[in-house]
Amino acid sequence: MDPKTRKEVLRKLHYGVYVATAKDGEEHAAALITWVSQASLTPPLVMLALRKDSGIYALLRRTGRGVVHILSQGQKGLAADFFKPTRVEGDRMNGHPFRLENGLPVLTEIPWYFHFEAREWAAGGDHGVLVAEVVGVGKNAEAEESLCLRETGWSYGG
Amino acid sequence: MDPKTRKEVLRKLHYGVYVATAKDGEEHAAALITWVSQASLTPPLVMLALRKDSGIYALLRRTGRGVVHILSQGQKGLAADFFKPTRVEGDRMNGHPFRLENGLPVLTEIPWYFHFEAREWAAGGDHGVLVAEVVGVGKNAEAEESLCLRETGWSYGG
Image (cartoon, rainbow over all chains, first blue to last red; front, side, top):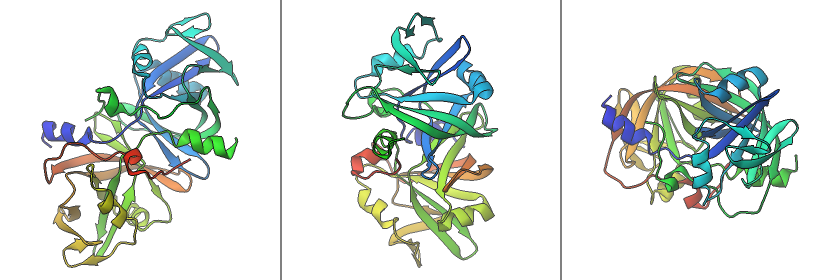
């Protein structure tokens, strides 16, 4: 495969922009992710690809429970704060307020989120593939539209 | 979970619009799919969720080889033709021209495509989850942007 064509073609796939969070005792993890899709209607499953060298991957392999937050248009700045290593200070993760819901961190500025529980892991490659069941959904606010990765000018993949 | 909130939240996930094709002897399959994401950079993997009651799912379980085409903006009409059962007449599938490349149907009107080979199947739910390696990429034409499901006014999932 020509590497340039491979990158061009694979970067035409569409993604949203999400922050995943998890918690194990006093250890918190949060990460910006894009490789997320629903994977079943009944039961409601999602599939997530997570960098194997990330803190949240290691944590989810242990706990199998987390939250995916769906960013709205206009939250690119918030997204950028979750490129950075996870830092918890009081009731804030990377500077953004959160509360605990069923023991998991919910970022209260992001309009939509769902709780998931791991059902299957595929070996994958440099990312692990998690198939997880959606076990709860929530809304923090009304908002029009979710953020599309293309709208940010960023890309991931290729 | 409140079904209305579940649908509202899960439909905020972003997707592209794709046509997957496969072939086993004289049997051809083509299907419109949206639940597609890259899943690894090295090796290049993708994850696809495919309806278990679809022809392409049955065919891919046997052959493990197929093509994903990435539609461009303006190809909503073409997409709609692949909601229908697969019908091959001469060098056309569902009315659209194709050629064989490594024995697999490539739809020549769609700008970008990649060939994949199955690596792992997860059980999933009403859709099966396929983790596949991208083994070839191609371009039929220059085009600006790929089609985002939101732009079609359709939705899938929830």
